[in-house]
Image (cartoon, rainbow, N blue to C red):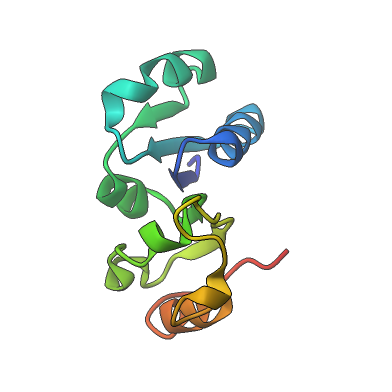
Length: 124
């Protein structure tokens, strides 16, 4: 059985993870904030191991889930859906949020809060 990686975010990091994962024989389900239609070309380039889905579908499909989205967007994800999942974060800052220190929580605090309701986290 081929394991599936859920990829939330289809920017540079999300695309790179998807390319490496499919090249290694993993299935990937990729989601982004603009919808599946906006990543049709990427899915075609990646081949039959790749599919587009909603964020919820990417989380549900993936044994491993990669977050490559802005920190502010990750705060909106359903933490309970990550239970039992292995996930990796590559969260980014957006222009509207110049620093995580300017917010009420740091990226580390957000990771700790998410880990309290989910499975193990991959570390760099």
